[in-house]
Image 1 (cartoon, rainbow, N blue to C red):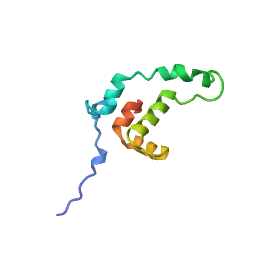
Image 2: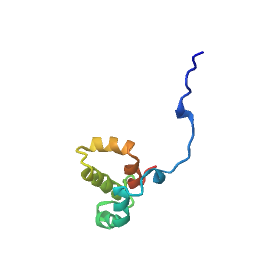
Image 3: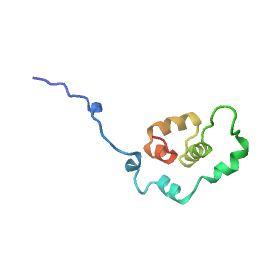
Image 4: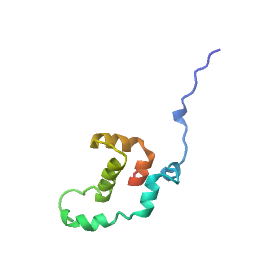
Length: 96
C-alpha cells in the first residue's frame, strides 16, 4: 500500500536565531568590533521626540544599508527580500 508522507512543516522546534548563525560569520565579527550606538547621537537632531508616529530605529536602517553594501545587494527591494530569508542578516539587525 502506498502511503503519503506527512508534511515536516507541522513539527515545532525551539531554536534561537543566534544559534543558527555560525560563530565565525563576518557579521558576528563586525557586531563584536563596532558599537553602532553612536548613530543615535549623530541623528538625534533629525527626529522629533513628541510629534508624529514613532520612527524606525536609525541604527537598524544604517545596518540594513551596510549589509547591502557589504554583500553587494544592488537594490533596496532586493535587500528587503534578502533580509527576509537570511538568518545572519536578521540576527545582525536584531529581528526575530
